[in-house]
Amino acid sequence: MAQAAAVAKPPAPPRRRRASATPRRLPYLLIAPAALLMLGFIAYPVISVFYYSLQNYNPTKPWRNGYAGFDNFVHAFTEDPVFWDTLTFSAKWVFVEVGLQLMFGLALALIVNQTFVGRSLGRALVFSPWAVSGVLTSAIWVLLYNSQTGITRYLADVGIGSYGTSWLSDTSTVFPAAIVADLWRGVPFFAILILADLQSVSKDLYEAAEVDGASRLKQFWHITLPHLKDAIVLSTLLRAVWEFNNVDLLYTLTGGGPAGETTTLPLYIADTSVDAHNFGYASALTTVAFVILLFCSMVYLRLSKFGREAK
Image (cartoon, rainbow, N blue to C red; front, top):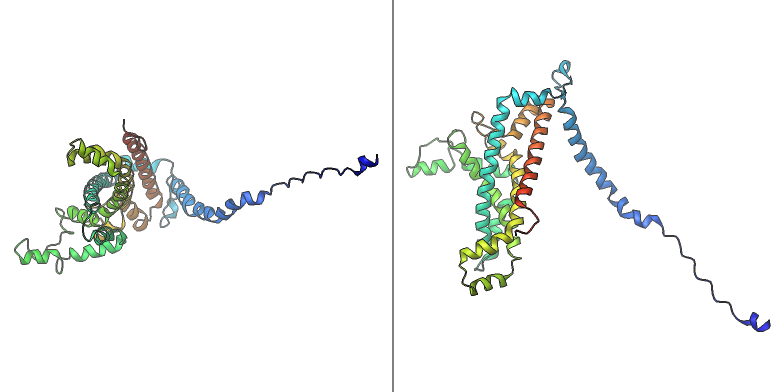
């Protein structure tokens, strides 16, 4: 008995403390303020637009306010020719702008991806217009297109055109003039994204293609373009949405004129809400634009097989 009592008992295993729930919840608590702010500044306005699209809401005519159902949408599709004109111009603007920006952006990315003296300076010059805001870009091009001090005066000095000509007030020249102004700022966006993807292409692929006797054109078609597919799809989709919603540049350059020649759907929505105070109808037009962009984006991603390797 004495010997048994003398044997020391093994120490009891330490109790496992119950894991505190606070450390696991801490990340969510930290991001909660930002999430609530985003919910307030993004979700609430979106829901409000959907709500007011079903209302007749004009602060200057409160006696007409009230539930409208789908009357605003019916009016847009059946009774408002300006809606169709602005939607058609928006599609034309997006198609031309995105196509040209992609073409010139791809060309610039291929150029600045090469090794040459002053490449860093060249890249900085290519990318610098993207750092300029839309309103400032518009102000620069308004000065360049000024009939008294801009490009047209110097062209008239050498016998091209006539003095006092304003490209922004002529219906035959306002569209290409606006296109050039937006190209100056939009091309660097494609050049930046495409150059970043170009630098990840393995040089071994090009060396193997040269050994097999592939020309530069075949290397571009079978190596470069397939590698850039996802970058091109993503950049064109993002830029198409931004160009569709382009307001600052066109509003500052032309104000939608002359004679409504450069009025996009977002510009028409801004005029309907801010100038005419018809917020119910403007909300309906915004909802239509949202559905159009969502549908076109889904179809584009589906047809382009974004994120999937080509077989």
